Length: 351
Image (cartoon, rainbow, N blue to C red; front, top):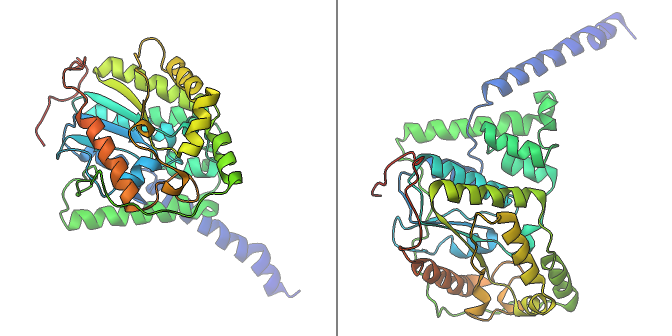
């Protein structure tokens, strides 16, 4: 090996790599406080703070509800804050959205939790939890909660930024550029999304391919688990504590489930046991009514769902569920016990 090659391999290349690593680390530090704007859930985490409307009801839900209500209205303008997201966000993400909302708004009358039974024991991988939660929720109390129940979630922060360039540099940079673009366009403050279309309770429905016995058996097994994860238990307890502090009422509902799955869950007592476990998690301070079951409103079968047996198949079934949910929300009485908590940060405003 010639002297020039030795100098390149032993001196010039290491110095260049160290220089790139230093530049990457500096960029990561300078971008560390940029609010993420990578996807809908990032935008929602910002909208709950920037939207100045004080909503009467808040819906916390998974993708069963989110997919069915994205384009359909759940109430009059300014009535319902639809904070439904997806499984990777989970109960912890919904809790953080609620906390952010309550810090800058008058409290709602009701917080309605619409999670499928399987969601109460489901856990996402560390990689997905980090992507959807860690980089979106960066406030000290949010990070402390995540550190407590997912202690591995922040371990990659110890790596040099150059080996984690997507999460530490590229995504914050594009989020910053999007923010600057919105400021340049003088865009209005973010609003919590609301579907523009009134759903039709009698919308024409389509039929999906029938699910096989093995898929149904798997769905029954997954939905029939009655043990809540520690994170879900803690999230429910915090929601209960918030209801005491701010004076809103917590309501729980079951979103649509195929009857071929729901019937065995009722027969085995799994749904009743899960409801009992949820009640224990909330604790005696948080009075919980019986969970409202949308499967009692109308019948859904496996042909009403995509092959995953989770999400409703087609616009017709989505409209029917959205219509039923809208009616349920609108019929919640204003006279329910609620108070303007002394800690409320703002007075009630008009939209």
